[in-house]
Length: 204
Image (tube, rainbow, N blue to C red; front, side, top):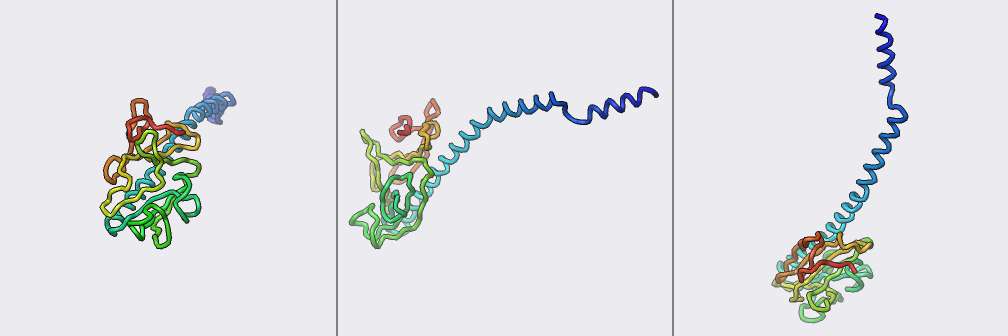
């Protein structure tokens, strides 16, 4: 009977909570786990943001192509840095889609009579380039879809996004390999996505 109070008191002391040493050990382990996980989480967020922006672009290109075919008109996608008043600036500034009023003159130039049907804001510091497969490459200032669904630029194109830090491991790309279809790029053996010439993307 005499041992019962001792055991009860011992159990109460053990259930009172962590000791200071135990608490410090737990905090140290948590800090190590956070330090390991934080960079991976940041990288994942950055890669997902770029992929989302590229998905937006592909969706807008498909929308423009569908409109061109269904309406029997020329439809253009181009960058703008002046609040969608003209085709200007860089693709990373944002872009818009408009229906051409005249499919014979000034194709790819936004002018009076053209109808804007969709706008996309800038990429928040990320960059977007659209180039052909020439050597050296030629930057494309617009992408126009004919009423057949074909693209005005017959050459294969690479459309790719890079993060503001220009880290190529985050770069993602679309490739125009057919008449008017845009496909996601694939990775090479090093995990870097490829351009339309099968070379590794860069972030200049």
